[in-house]
Image 1 (cartoon, rainbow, N blue to C red):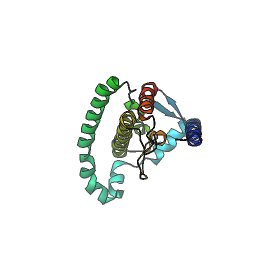
Image 2 (image 1 turned 90 degrees about the horizontal axis):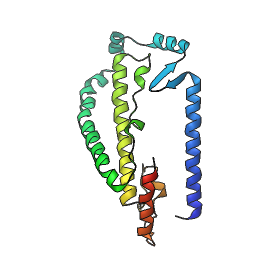
Image 3 (image 1 turned 180 degrees about the vertical axis):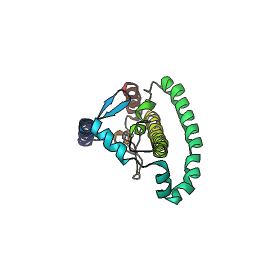
Length: 195
């Protein structure tokens, strides 16, 4: 990777971090505050949320029938997701310390905070919990796999790949062979320091 591309990637990373901080500040200052694991809304917002809440029976009548019919199929995915979670967490817990790779914190990816939204009824909160687990789990697994790929094979593909992880942009170019082993070792050492 040439210096210009490395410089641009560094700038992109810094801008993404700045944007994330700015968005978080905007959200937090708007209508709620995060206190530990709790999200606290202003009193007037809580009252407005309660007024918007649709009761269970009215919700069932107004709900789309196709969603009720496919519900068992959707929720049956909890079993393979839980198994994936168990195996990937076990892999990370046992192998990452051996490799000297910093572990991905599960709680940074799987976040359950939508239950605190008072405009959702208990079924909607259940749906949100399921989706938060599923999408958070995929992000958690993707980060563990990305760290594994960076440890064993930090080389870009010859063809363009859609949906690459954030680490991929810094990987070695396809076919860039000089000093491969030395550069691979730098990636490995760097993984121990990353949080």
